[in-house]
Length: 446
Ligand code: TRP
View 1: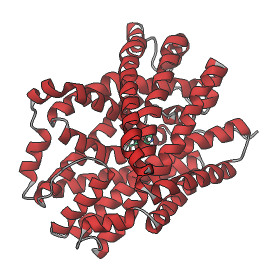
View 2: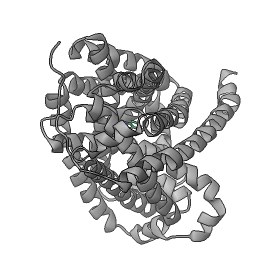
View 3: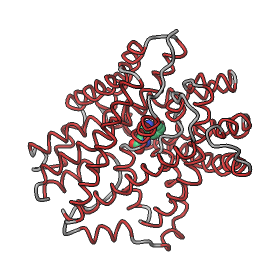
């Protein structure tokens, strides 16, 4: 049995986690959620959830991973036995499913990077999206993206993931700052900032029932929680560093980049006179393409923007593939190359469904994102805080020191608020999914 891999540096671990966290969720979900759910009022609730729910939940995953030095399935089996091992299997299935359609959307971003340069979508952004978002083109770019993901993961923790994120994360930050600076100079910037940042507490009072779950879900998704990514990444930590400070740094970067994306997107849309409209992957491509068609030097701007999105998607996608791959390597003793090709190949095949018909994108996304992620996060939070709190606390204290009442506060923050918020989100997710199955999906079936 070869020795299990580890990160070369602490920065490598942090960059990999930031790379995982910063992805499509920061770019389309976050700004549009802010826009739809009452601007700065939503922002406030979201920040609160990131700190009160996201941070403790991230430490749950970190303690499990570093304690066991195992993939999520092995980690839960070691600490909880056979029943809890099933939760680990939920993670593996979730990663598999999310990556299959995440890769299709990421494929569009690569396609749009080139299309921006050639001006392919300027004449009719909507028709262009219709033509390339499904069918042969979508399959081809999904394949290309999966080749990149497989390439990085096949190279392993140090020479694959760690090396790749060392370039990708700084690139995302630099390009993001550049784009935001450019956006600041646009005519529509003032109105855009107003829309994005003006707090309206009346909205919060009136719509808190939809704002709360939306903010909680976003906090979870954007931090890559609920799927074992943070268990897997922290299992490659060789030394006992301070997990709380690492978590805070990761969350700080993710939040800052999400915020920056709003400062980019809204000036683009407002200046070009495009309605921010509804959220969702389609909107990102259609309305932004329409904006780039109007803006000065729009083709270069478009290429830089979509290129940045593609890099962010890649650094997230590698974390999604690493979870099932680490499971196969650890539990079946398969070598990394074989495991990566096998799992990556299967993900490619599953992704053919959303690449050929967008109904599967919704079907997969709603199921994985609104149900599986929340379910996984809920069960692992219950496990750590109620079943093995002492071991988890002991692990958290390594690299920090005696936590005393702060440690107790962490355990209780997970036991009640995190568990309640996730349970409520799961309920809403199931209700929403049943509605989708009985309406849109039933229509599609005929
Ligand atoms: N956090 C990423 C984003 O914002 C997506 C992502 C990557 C993810 N890995 C994850 C979400 C694991 C949930 C779980 O786009």
